[in-house]
Amino acid sequence: MKVRPIDIAELFAEIQAETLGPRGSASGICETLFHSADAVYAFVMYDDAAAAGEISLLAASGIDAAAYRRLEQRAGSTALMRAFDQKEVIFLLVHDEPSLDFLFIEGSVIELIIAPFKIDESREGFVAAAFDKRELPDRHGAVAVTRLAARTVAQTIRVDDVQRQSSDLASEEAAKTQEALRNKYDIAKVIGNSGPMRQVADQIRQIARSNAAVLLRGERGTGKEMLAYAIHYASLRARREFRQISCAGVPPALLEAELFGVETQPPKFGMIEQAKFGTLFIDEIAATPAATQDKILRVIRDSRFERVSGSEAIRANLRLIFSTVADLEDLAAKGKFSEELLYRINAFTIFVPPLRDRKADILLLAEHFIEKYAQEHRRRVARISTAAIDMLAKYHFPGNVRELENVIERAVIVCDEGVIHARHLPATLQTAEETDTRAASTLDAAVAAFERDMIEDALKSSRGNIAKAARDLGTTERILGYKIKNGGIEPKRYK
Image (cartoon, rainbow, N blue to C red; front, side, top):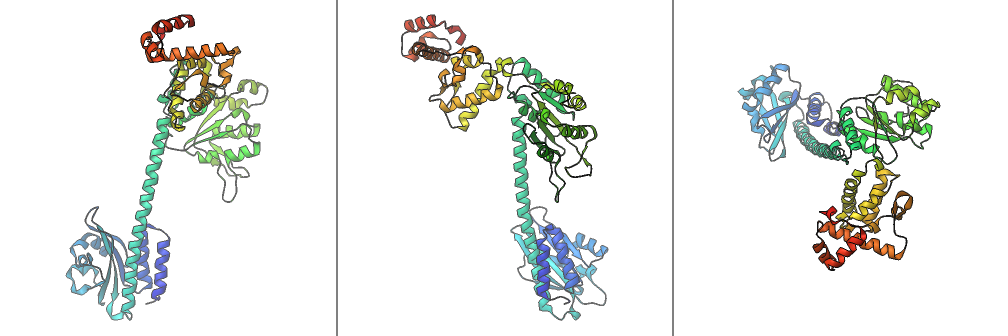
């Protein structure tokens, strides 16, 4: 041999380490047998009985095109089939096998050294190395390297199996995550039956499948981030990345690096590159400095940008969604916000209403948050009492939906029974007289409020039936009727 068997084994190990896949590794092994082990030619056959039940040519080296085609087409009807179901190396003299006449070489005595390999119960194959028997000084070494070649191919296929399974599992998990996010942020599930929220949902459906920039305007805590997700997952880019960045309170230099990346070795990708082909949500766009506004404007206008410290223009293919609580028109008039950028992002604006303008959604939102946090905190809380709902409805919620969510989470945590009552709500709701949610300030009034809460809850459970409510409360219908009358409670409301 031109190369020592130990060196050929090292070459096989290098081929396997390159993780070229079964076909690429088999091709490299055949090349090594042909060039380094004095083989006249070499090939690898593979039988995946679980797939097709026919042997296929995995790789070959040293064989002309005509012989290659015949080997592909006729291998299953040749003497090569003897190699299957074998555990040890077998030897075939080509000139003794009429079915292998296409592998005969004039003036040579070609011997095929065939080393079988087995992957599992349904898959097997072999490596065949052809040598001129008259010019083979080290037949033992030829057998050894062919057997090692077979083991290397088998191991390569096993490793590829593991990698494919891992890749399939990762793809399946990614698909499940994608579907879960799509369901979670489906616009049909945006909570709200009020007129303002139905209008928002209609606008999102209109704009979602376009690539136009969207500006979400509204107070803090109104759910602009959730709506940005809803737009993304209703768009044609739903299978791509969704990235978000808040510009509020971020130093200008850091903000530019986070948005556009930094030209280093290797380069640091910013949010724009991370969201390639997907969606980037830029929260609080009003907080960006003038230089950053100009760069964002170029992304919108030219679909180009440069990394920080870079000079090469990079193409940007993504959808941009912006949000703000500020009056951008006023800022533009004062020279604190780019007028051109305002015109670009203001083409399609969605105004997200504050919670005080969508009071009809409070009960739906409260029930949604109760279910969410009861599960998260493992508490048995089924519903919220009428008195508590009334208290929530009277409150002006300066923190909007976010504040309501925090209120309900706290109530779920402190609730010591299956129903959230007014007493479980925070003091800000129970003592805020200016917001028309004044709670009782004396012991007698507090007891009266607690009693009213229990009566309303009982009427709710009994669907307005006073007799049943009285039995549930352990009192008489007459006494309960008296308390209902004095408290100004309307039983018909609960039917």
